[in-house]
Length: 481
Image 1 (cartoon, rainbow, N blue to C red):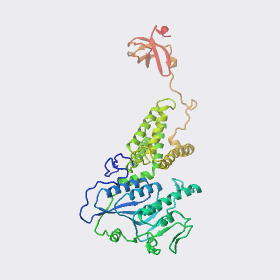
Image 2 (image 1 turned 135 degrees about the vertical axis):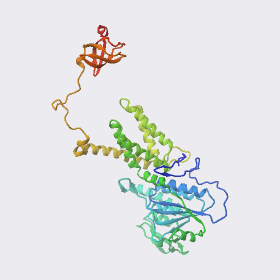
Image 3 (image 1 turned 180 degrees about the vertical axis):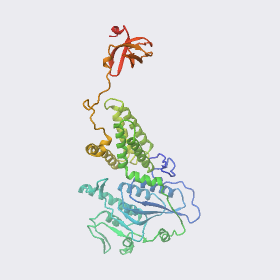
Image 4 (image 1 turned 30 degrees about the vertical axis):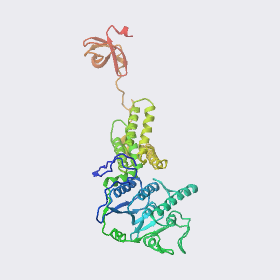
């Protein structure tokens, strides 16, 4: 987590931020001594896909739990279909550092990465009709979908995920074999003489199946019980009198989660809009859309705890260098440095960096590079499609001048002034060195050739350079030539 202070502003939302200089995970606390009373139970919601922005929310909840001895327990309200494995692993690490008793309450589903997070709690309760399990890792690419992994890579990923599941179960006091059966479909789960799961299937449990008692000791398979609501959970946990406080999720944090999940789309709009603006004269809608898209992209990742001010500085420096390159011929050092700074700023804004460090872990760079590639690739694909198909559409005629402008069609070029060479006239204004002269009865803008010529002086045209008419005093043209 970057140690820059986080601001949560925009779209009418405001949020409180943590104090600067906090530890990497914000769990160590110097709270005041405990006070008498029933205390309170902090509910941390883990709803929706598991992704890096959710990690920031969980860590904020962990700090709230650590900053007060009044917190007697923490309940994680789970309703998630799963998500990114690396984000789930970091959430598990954050949960394991909370000192207060930890409970997981599966409201509807805790699938895949959500099941692994539930295993980190010391007790798991489930609502009627809820399910948990199916934590087999898969390869899902944005805009592509689920892809098959090579056997060697699949075994490597599954083995690591199974180890994470067993470790989470051991920390939470659950059966590691049950956790591994959620990840591996090639293992058989048998407790005592009872076959829980045959080989060839992943373990996914309903609330009743998770709460059934198995083995000689008749221990619950996974769940401590099925409860219809949070009040019943607290009653069974002996916390009936505790004050329940659900950690608020601000509107800015909700929006930031969507911005983070749609990173590739905002990069596509940002890069594409700025590219179109550079290729067209003036400043218009594409530039406005591009700047707004990149601003929302950075703001969302900043709120999510990923982007810091150093990333914004890289993006701004890169834009300035690319702007300098536009005024120079060819493509040189400013363009190369600007491109590198812009790419580095966009990538680093999408990844988390450890406290005290500047460079992220290599494994965290993968999703960020994929999002950047999708954004740049989308711009290239859109440009190709527009160039190929737009000329065939009726809208093309309204956007582009297609009529012939040849001499045969009645069009002529601007009047040339080359025939003025050698003509004589009078300077109507002082030529310092530019001014106006009368030549062939016409007022024409002229430039004196290296000397001041006062008004009223007779002049002669010595040469014409495009639309630049150069004159000198009459009688001086031989010296000029």
